[in-house]
Length: 419
Image 1 (tube, one colour):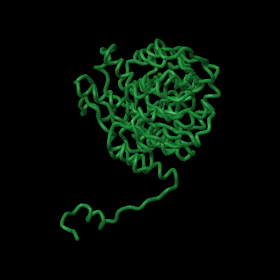
Image 2 (cartoon, rainbow, N blue to C red):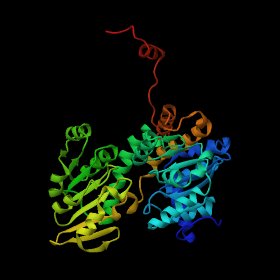
Image 3 (cartoon, helix red, strand yellow):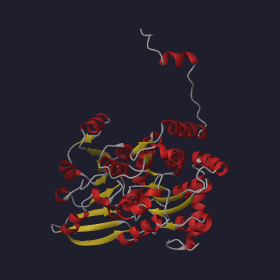
Image 4 (cartoon, rainbow, N blue to C red):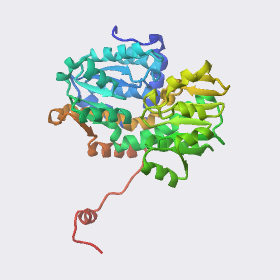
């Protein structure tokens, strides 16, 4: 293959071994792959994917390839690529990949444009960068696009804003909205992998630390639950009264970030919003504070403000930048403020991504069949797909559940019976 850009193609063999290891934990996607290989529901479809280039993503790409799709993959974050996986996809699966871990801003967007040069019929996005560039710079491609999918909360927010403004030019299925995605991927996946990234980057003991969790959505819930299990004292900051109340009822301290900044040892943002940790928060933090982000983009932490405040900056460990302030205090930023679970670790466990990527594969199949009947807006994953994935996952885990009797079905569908 000539059309690719990876760090080192010689890393491929190690990547293949890790891809095969992840596949063992992805039984639902494996079942879909077997069916796709027989039915070829994506035959003739060109797909441009902008996702984290990980072992789990590699298995999704292979599933789509087996289903007949002509797939190209680029990274959705400059620090989330696993270089050996990128090399293996090119070498062993003959899938073009444009992704290098640590690539700069210019290269990142050059790679996105390379994926768009594939002239896709469908898009797959993780943060909506691909669709955004497509709408701004490659509108000539839009007439041939049937639809796309979006993996993240951040991306869905951006796409719904586009749809509200009348700017979205083709239908999008919000994979993030599937129950089998956000209840499990966001909660259990982000919860575990965020802890993993912080520990790998710092090797600190979490027990006894004040850990500030900014945002109590599904990702925040998952991380708060995991870090409390490791002995941390968890503080939650929120702007929405409903999740704030839930956090209180779950046993966490809830307070404004202005107050949390004074007492926190570790700060993690999981909101999808801008400047959640800002200049005045840095001014209040104690010496040695650790700041990390597990939301999609690095804008959640006001890094430019921290840069201007610092009198010195140095890399003290891989993925740990130490900022020395004028008064001698030190603030440690992990992974350049990017997704810490992918910057310093390997992202979500494969068994969780099994459900998320099953949603991706089946949503693309749905679009291939129904896109001409859909409006130019954001759709949730059809409920029958969500339930099918849950059933397959339970079967793979050897878990059985009950079925309603005809009498129970009749009761639930009637209105005459009461007390």
